[in-house]
Length: 262
Image (tube, rainbow, N blue to C red; front, side, top):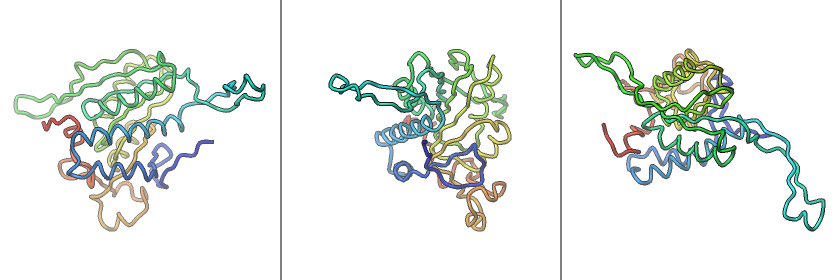
């Protein structure tokens, strides 16, 4: 039985906060202001390589198998029996540009090695703000997005580094649900850092989504709330500043990953 290393909390069984000292150490390094290109790409790639393997081990089904090893020529006892991943399951990873581009590629590369490649797909979702003549944001345009087919009975993975407000992720999930002829088997989001605000939004708008995060940040909460166990006072917890950046957070990860500060 695989046992997920995770922190205890009161956010519900759909939320997994990983208690992995290696990932937490790498993420702490990534958050430092002096860490820019090319080191940040290496850190994000390494963290997501471990994160997706953790998710696959905990979420995807397994099947019993027997393998005749190289020693079978010497003895008929050289047969290993055990549980392995069911390589026939469908999986779709979604690149939510732009911070999600590298993480989704890592997830895609990992899945095509673990599952049958023809059962794995990568989609690309592009979001742009729509404004009126006065510059007021009136909506979001998804034009240019590339969705390669249905998600019937598939595991849909959403690697989005910073789960701040949850706005982009919620719209992406709604897009897939609206266009799905049949429901996916499971929708799973994978993050470096999430906030209490993100959890509240997912629970209100998409309670079926399973959330995995290396860390939860609630640094804008009151001192009294910070003394309580994780999730004990969810409505009072906050991890966003006035411009909706995560605190302590890591700053604009998408900007630094792309060396494009717009």
